[in-house]
Length: 203
Image (cartoon, rainbow, N blue to C red; front, side):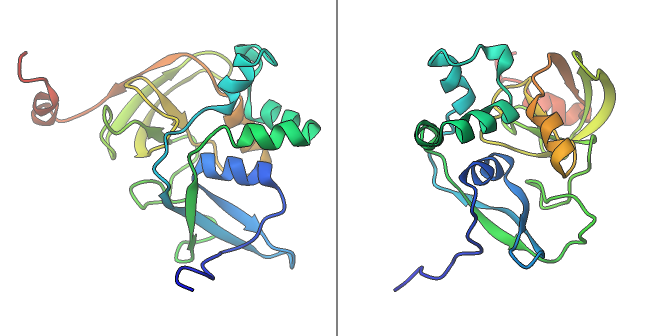
């Protein structure tokens, strides 16, 4: 039948699959030890709903306790309720296999270019143009004051002062990114003509 046999790979961990969809790209380790790279290929059009916020709403955790690792651990400790929790988010991401970039390069962002650890941001393109340099000031643990580039998007990133820092690949980077909920501010740097063009007409 049409549209059959389009699978890239079958995975054995629904929790890691869920977070792969949140990230939008990653690597899948096959049973023979080799890996394949996958990147964002499309979505089903449903809005993203945070399962972290749902855990808070249910009274299981307080907001400051929730991180990616906490969510993963809870789902694995509660397989039946965890499976139901993962279904709380109706958004589903489809992937494509990435073959033509070096294994040492970062995953492809929304601009179809490899992102760089601690230099690339995922942003809401309604407020921050892709490709724009962004001066980032992040407080909390591991304060940052650095110039970054808006190179990616994400369904969970909404608003003018929201961004996701790409921490790199691997477990340590994933854990660092999963704990990130720090306050800060972003200053988007644009040519003045471009900045004027973005102003509302009634100003």
